[in-house]
Image (cartoon, rainbow, N blue to C red):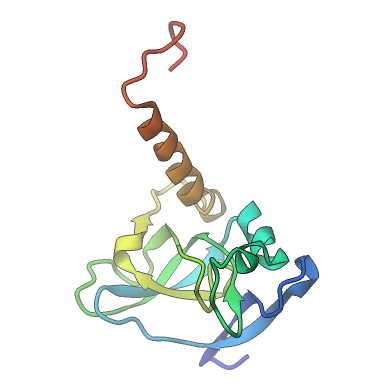
Amino acid sequence: MSTSTFRAAVVRDPGGPDSIEIIDVPVREPGRGEVRLAVAAAAVNPVDLAVAAGLFHARGVIHQPDLTGLGWDFAGTVVATGPDVDLAVGTRVAGLVDGFDRDHGSYAEQLTVPVAKLAVVPDGLDLSTASTVPVNGLAAAGILDLLGDATPVATGCW
């Protein structure tokens, strides 16, 4: 692998876990409001198996003609910043690559993402653990939104 590429997991022809392949992807320098980071950890989510199986292709959710990137949550270290970014190189961050139509996701050695999609990982929290928070945190927030101002059923339940 040269320094101008990195490896990422993708699906070209959906058909289950055996359809996942590793490809070389060109490094993209961060633009305005973006950072490039070295991925230290990426959480595994059931949605990736559904993508590999072709479920979202069959339902018309994925329109990528050549390949679809895998992986959603990630944690890593900032290695380059674009203009208008206040994060320093070396900052530990976690975040989410969302959407289905993408060339690669968090199952990659590097990512270039908007800084608005990141959170700084607190000292004392390892990056593997931090990578499990974004999708699970969004799910928890969604459940709380659905519950609204629900009254607990028993004392200490909430």
